[in-house]
Length: 352
View (cartoon, rainbow, N blue to C red):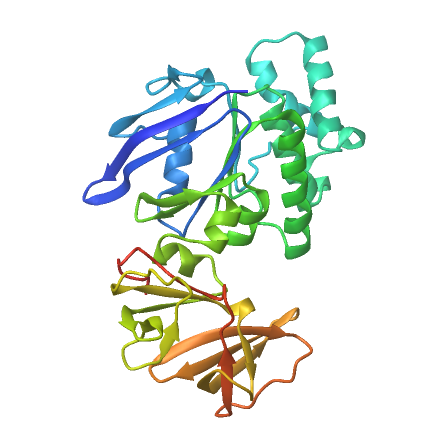
C-alpha cells in the first residue's frame, strides 16, 4: 500500500474559498475520515486527490511521488462515489472489469481479477446479474469491487453509505472496514455522519469552512476534543461559552447568566473558553446536584434525550430509554460526575 500526503491545498471558486491550507498525511494502510458539514471542503479534498479537481496551490504525493497535473487514470486510485455510477447495460462482472479493460489487460487476467474482487465483497454468485437486479447494498459492493479490482495505491470513498437505509448503512459500514483492513488499503473516507467516522477510522479529520480543525483518533476526539466546533459536531454534547474562574474551593466554569460548574483540573487557567458536557454521562434526579428545570424530553428508541435549563444555559442529558419522561417545567437536580465536564483550551467561537 501507499502513503498519501496532502500539503497546503488551496482551492477557490471566485470569491468562495473551498480549501484553505488543507494538510494531512495518511500512512500506508491507514483509514482516515474527513468529517464535517456540507460545504466544508471534504469532497473537494477527495476530488483533488483523485484528479477531478485542480487545486490552486499545494501538493499531493502518493508514495512520495507528486501527482498534481497527472490525469486521474494515471494516479492508480480507486474511487467509490455516492451514486455508485454503475453502467446499467453491463453485468456485475462487466462493471467490475471495465477499468481493467480500459488498461488493455488480457481477457483471462481480467476474468481472474474480477472473480477475486467479487469474492472479496461476497458477490461472486451474482457476476452475471445487472445493476437493476441488485439491492442498494449489493450495488454498493459492486462499486467497491470495481474500485479495488485495479489494485489501487489508495482507495477514496465519497459518502458511499448515504443512499442506504439505516440497517444497510450499518452492515455496509462494517463490510467496508473489514475489506479494507483485510487487504491493508490506504483509505480516505468522506462523510458527514460522525457515527460512521468514529466506527470506521484510524483517525478522523474534522473540517470546517475549508480547513481541518483537528485530526485525531476516534477515542481522542470523543473523549478530549480540542475545539468547540469538534465537540458540538460530534453530537451528544452541550458546548457552553463562558470563563474559568479561580475560587477558594478550586476553579469553576461560569456561564454568563447561568451556573458555575466545578472543574476537575486544579490547574485550569483562568480566562474565557468553552465547557463540554457529555450528555450520556450526566444524570437527573432529586438528590444533590445543579438545580435545573426540564424543558422537553424526546424518546429516541435506545435512549431518551432531555433538555434542561440552568439559568440561561440549556444542557442536554441522555437518559435510559426505560426511564420515565420528566414533565416540562419539572424541577430536578443535575449530577455532573467526574469526566462528564471538560473545559477547552480553544477560546474560539462555538458553532451556531
